[in-house]
Amino acid sequence: MSRSWTRSTAAVSAATALALLTACGGGDDGSSGAGGKGTADKPVTLTFWAWQKGSKDVVDAFNSSHRNIRVRFEEIPSGNAGGYAKISNAVKAGNGPDLVAVEYPMLPEFVSRGALQDIGPYLTDDVRKKFLPQAVDLTTLGGKSWAVPFDAAPQTYFYRKDFFAENRIEVPRTWAEFRTAAEKAKKADPRARIATFMPDDPTTFEAMAWQAGAQWFKAEGDTWKLNTSDAATGKVADYWQGLIDDKLVQTAVSFSPEWTAALKNGSTVGYLGASWGAGVLKSTLPDQSGKWGVAPVPTWDGKPASGMLGGSTWAVTKGSGKAAAAVEFATWMSTTEDGVRARIAPGTSSAFPADVALRPAAKKAFDAGFYGGQDIYRLFDEAGASINPRWSWGPTTGTTNTTLKDRFGRVPGGSVTIRDAVRAAHDATVAELKKRGLKVEG
Image 1: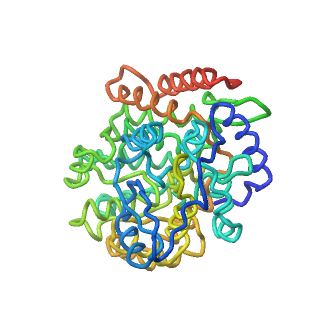
Image 2: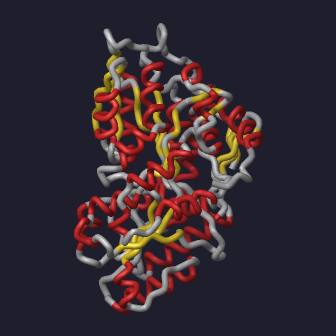
Image 3: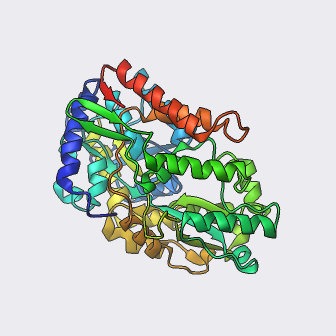
């Protein structure tokens, strides 16, 4: 990730943001006693909800090597597929788990609704220093720590090396070249598409806007400034609208049977994803081992640039009285070689740790044979260094993304354009911010 995003600028933004967030309901840490620290004679039992690949393997490894803490794991749907709603409802009902997975984009939303507790008393400076400064900034609001960072998720492009080579298609470095490659692929095989616009997944579009230089949310003083009508967002919207209108990309729902079938039958020969996508493809398409390659995501001018697509943190829920134990487990997952190895070695996860020192261990644990032995973690490192530093998330990402998802679902049919969807999301976001009593401009 770029070091040009200074810690001081991020800290000021975070402090301002928290003042706005707590205006709509955060602040009670919900902890009790010593934070639920157990002993070997009387271990504390934690409940942990997550969907990330390898989570059960991590829990099993932790439980086999620790006596003072026991972890009960429940796999939930991914956040946007119902996981966040399940977490929110459980916390509201007073029966939430102790520790939950929350992606960076949704962390301010959960904080603003008072669903999480400040874990600062249990997260030492020595631990915080292990993580990328940007990951720490994204989990810190108003000087309080709201989650333990786990991974970063720079954009990457996965492609079928055999198809590209057989049809003499160059791996695109720019978005102009990407369209040319899409046209050549369709000409070579009328079924073939080099990517998918996933109508149910606004986060991919947001990552594209992020990469292009957009800055949708910005906190200034006591006001949230919202800007989704900027030139960068418009450029991305028009570009993808053109690809969809000219039928140069698939429009299947993310990770659906349709999407998977298209990959398996060769009608989809590329995937615009993130670092974690390497494990997804490997576990989804074992019969295609050796046929896939990984490349930097195309950029507008050919120079390295990336947004971040997802990225996970571990957060302690407001009602948990076991914060110390929960943070101890979360820290083990995020900062130890044993934790990273347990997650990655089974082959389903290609997590790119936010703890920079663990990247060699992650690279060693991930069998890159599926990608012909390509050094994909070096590519992830380079992509991470190019992440645009100007993007930040607001406290109503759930509303923004729900509206985008609804409208994007109509784009393939032609009744709504991508620009229409972005405008609708803007209006819904403004309305939600005002509903929560926050000042907003834009």
